[in-house]
Length: 475
Image (cartoon, rainbow, N blue to C red; front, side, top):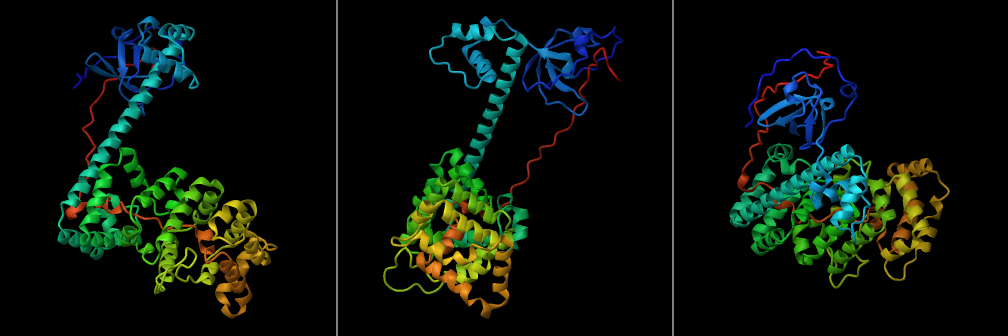
């Protein structure tokens, strides 16, 4: 696009002091004026910065149709009369200088007066940085919109697939080793083996229920680029509860509420044996955790040191413990399928037990809100009082001994089971809360029809950009 010109370096007179000072890099697309160059014909020329600073300490600057390599010390911001600036430029300068500026009641004359009180070179430095930030934000929005359109296109492609094609895709995912699938598809690279298996199972469910697939496609089409980005970022985090923000948790709860309980059971095996009331309680707990920073921080502390394999093992154990035959007749919120609570205690560390007791002490109202009616936080604390005098190391040693000497730990197991009975079987939820989130939109990000996207070749043939030396050149 640009004409690249070879320029000879001329000998030059002694450097003026202003060319010796250190200068920071100029922001992209900043309007600058050149000065102090050996090639004097380029001094006082106006240009536009087109690159960040490079290894040689220069930035590319567009001068007319030429691109030159210029040191920041040989550039200064182009200064224009304040009266020629638009109201957008005036606001940008003032906001960049002071982000708390209130423009209520100001007219353009007031803004010009404020800008004139700023040193000219500083005012246009503010403007250059403000424009660079705005351009970067605009580029991010465009990238986000492009990704959203890509996701929606994939969703439509999946909706166009026949049930047999979806089943074939699921069989392919099950037959190929997860590690190979992650190499084949970037969308899967941050998913665990268990999550990939669940995605394949969900595809099989959708093949048997076309209406479910169509509903998911419709929901995707109605989501904004920001909502799709949040959904994508959540699915790319195996330790989601340890990394999700309160806003992401609330969004997760909203997504779960937008789907019927029957569909949630079909989409996620973790809900297969839960009643409507239990699923609703799980959603409420997610919302409570999002609105209670102390509770969220405790969960993060519990999971931050766990490996992906440990989380998978925990999830597998919870599925197995909750996969018993569901009793006939209605179930209350506290009568979920039996869980091996002693086994859960064996997997706890002393620090996790200490965190649980600390939460009950410092946030009794929050803990009480999670318990079934008629239960008491004080009763739970009383049942666990035998642990309170222990240090973290002693708790670790005690809990570790429970794994090795099953017959010698009946009192500890009874203490835990007593506390668990008092809270209606919900102590596990106080320890883990709810770590297994619905991955309803997961399958929308799987490459359809078994295709692989070719990697974008972003490399380009490098051009040799001529450089101009200043009067104090060290070369």
